[in-house]
Image (cartoon, rainbow, N blue to C red; front, side, top):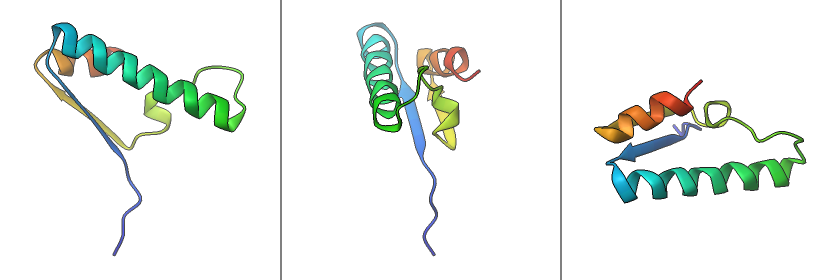
Length: 65
């Protein structure tokens, strides 16, 4: 049985927290371009589960709206 789901983990703060936000933004910009969307999509529209620990938990809470 194959499940079609996706998970975005997030961990740490400082430079790691900033770099994961930059990478996530790049992923969302690529989705926007490939699908011809006018607005930048939200990660919660494309990932089934988003989780984090430490500062990463706060980052995920902030972007998961």
